[in-house]
Image 1 (cartoon, rainbow, N blue to C red):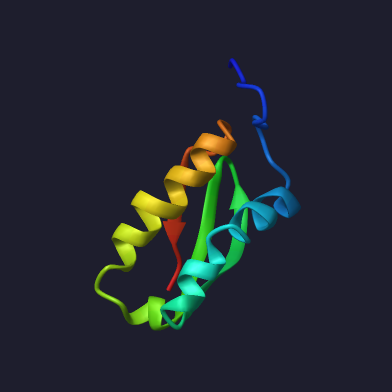
Image 2 (image 1 turned 60 degrees about the horizontal axis):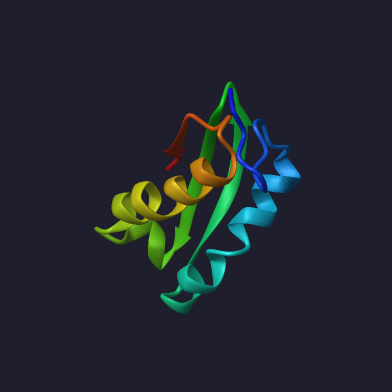
Length: 84
């Protein structure tokens, strides 16, 4: 797998948390947040909390925002799954 400069093939939990810090202000601005539940076999498991947990747009936020960011930064991430 080719890894672009500035990316990490398989991230640590701490690296994922650091990347999530970049999207938290937008989530918190809408009264929500996200919690990293687990990371295994290339899948990140996230829980959207607060207003984001009940928002009808939460799937779009997760897939088009958070998943895209994490997959660009960490090519070893295959998917981001929402945990309820």
